[in-house]
Image (cartoon, rainbow, N blue to C red; front, top):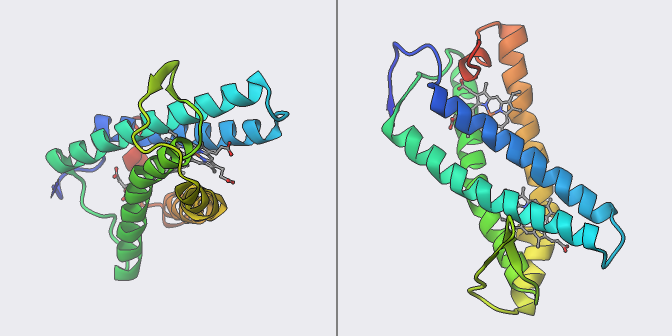
Length: 182
Ligand code: HEM
Ligand code: HEM
């Protein structure tokens, strides 16, 4: 990735990647909530889980594409501001990129550790690990369970508040850099 100070905004593909990730993340939390609300052992519950897994696998592919694109294309320089705001923005973006890459892998492990098929929009995905109560325990309780969901709520919450603060309080156009019409 090279920073190009003359760029005023993210390029169109970087914007498309960013907002596709946002839509898929919303889809992941919505399908998980709908699954939890559906009665146990029903086709609806399974359908929401299959959709959740499909969105998660798609997210993984999109995030790889996004990271590769960020490495080969030019990026705008950081929004001007105090050093601590620039460092925290960098750290938040790094955490979000890492989390959107590893949490789908933990989701795969959570699914694969139980005797159930893993699907990607109707196509069965191979199970490389097989049944494992130990992996299921760690995924359910830590890496793909409530602590992971909390982590996302906090980091995404901070990220969104920072974006809105820049846009409407500092009025430096930070959000516009990520919008095609900004
Ligand atoms: C960044 C991507 C993902 C996010 C944010 C996400 C989010 C979540 C959340 C919040 C839960 C509920 C956790 C709990 O309270 O116990 C969950 C459960 C689950 N997720 Fe994901 N997920 C993602 C990707 C995936 C992927 C790629 C798969 C599988 C290929 C997957 C499979 C599962 C399974 C099997 C469950 C448990 C369902 C059950 O209890 O029956 N997830 N996920
Ligand atoms: C839902 C999950 C989200 C994730 C995982 C995410 C992730 C990221 C990442 C990794 C970056 C760094 C730039 C890049 O790699 O392209 C970024 C930048 C940005 N995001 Fe998000 N984001 C999310 C949601 C949002 C939302 C809802 C908003 C708006 C309210 C937003 C506004 C921005 C802005 C304005 C930038 C550019 C910051 C700058 O100019 O330095 N993001 N986002």
